Length: 420
Ligand code: NAD
Picture 1 (cartoon, helix red, strand yellow):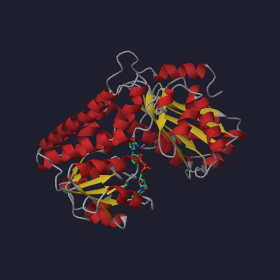
Picture 2 (cartoon, protein in one colour):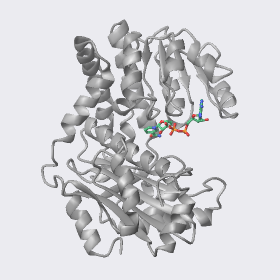
Picture 3 (cartoon, helix red, strand yellow):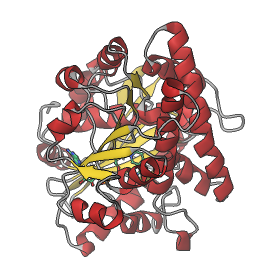
Picture 4 (tube, protein in one colour):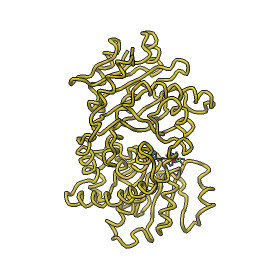
């Protein structure tokens, strides 16, 4: 068994070895596997650049639904690890685990810059088929995931993410209290996208103020928007309200009609394909769809001043491509710096929800972004570099009461039988 295995083959391997649950935990300076049969995989994980001494990887086979539940914990110095659960298919165990490790670290950065008393975590439910499942099967999967998560003793707090719906969050919540993004009727705050969009727009406004001056900086400007979904559509509304003309590309065939019903062509125009959007001359580009869209080829064609959007992991290679944008004179606001309102919304559910607190956080994205851009300009480097430094510094600061408690939570979970 090695990391090139298909996840379905990994599931069979686990079942053949009588392993229903397992883990890899970083303890006493080494990575340790729950079962001897997992040692070859453990040795591979240790060599991956995405493995940054993460505190733990936890998994369970759900034979009834042919799913693999996984949780990745980056670190718990600032508090319990938190991040969304995505429902996704992968071709190899390496692709699945590396994505989980990378996403958990990304959440650690985002939670730290957001000043949340949370560490970074992420969960992935793997299944070969993830689309067009009936409600009963989805309920069975997310219910099983909730039972799995409950056994992790709170080291990971979940939220909504790719291909997971509000209904799925209810299924998890019915089995596990360490759940956010639940509907208001359950004491939650529901879908956070509107606030995410407000935060993203604060970032755009700050970059425009930095570049063009603080007086109506978006009035008469041209903005390019990739993705007009839950986040992007609201960003578009805010751009139009601020006086910008928006050009949009979205792959959903229903989007043009939605746009025509709300905006005039003086306000918003659709663009025929994604490549054209990235080659247009404009002031702002706001990516709000998918990741890895900023790479050698796309950057070479850009004719814009500012990039600020909500899509996660926009830079294909964060170091290389943030540097390339800086060298081209494009102001790039890192996604994890400005799309944080989603997770802040979820975090606040845990302490009781006060809407005005969230509005203050929207303002904070504006002032933080201005500070970030000023520091980057002074040091003649990419804002990405400074944002990563801010995250790394804040990640060292332990929760004032529950600092770095994750390893104790895990020890308790294992003592209670997790992984046996
Ligand atoms: P969504 O699914 O509601 O919207 C995505 C939109 O992008 C859809 O309209 C889809 O048709 C379009 N799209 C997909 N592929 C495209 C492509 N190649 N080119 C152009 N359009 C494309 O998702 P969302 O909730 O709006 O999230 C958008 C992005 O923001 C994602 O990367 C997500 O991870 C990130 N994000 C969202 C939140 C949140 O609160 N929803 C929080 C933080 C980060």
